[in-house]
Image 1 (cartoon, rainbow, N blue to C red):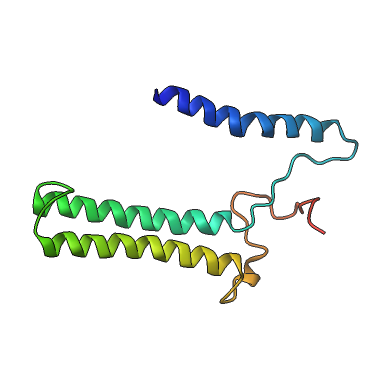
Image 2 (image 1 turned 90 degrees about the vertical axis):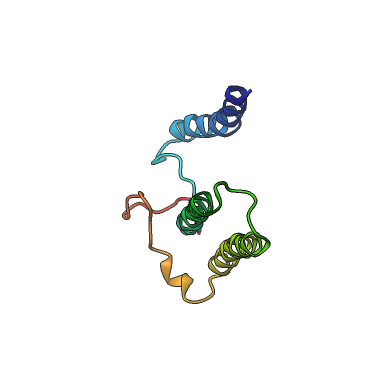
Length: 124
């Protein structure tokens, strides 16, 4: 069952990108297919930090309680508050970055794995 889900993801994401790449390569003067990254890099970094903290929380619970679930009421409540806080932190950070609050507008030139000299042809 898991294999069919990954096939669906590759077909759902890969085929449209493949078609767009072929289309863009047929246009004269096109430098290739560009997808503006926007806030994707920032969101990925925040997500990875939150995910690592979540895994650390689960590992600590496994060592202290003997499993990820169960334990005392206080331990369960502390884990709940911590994990929900991580979720809220991710949402708040993503929203602040998307609305360019706190100096995020200055990150316009920040690229993640993209050659800095190339500009997106779709941006006006």
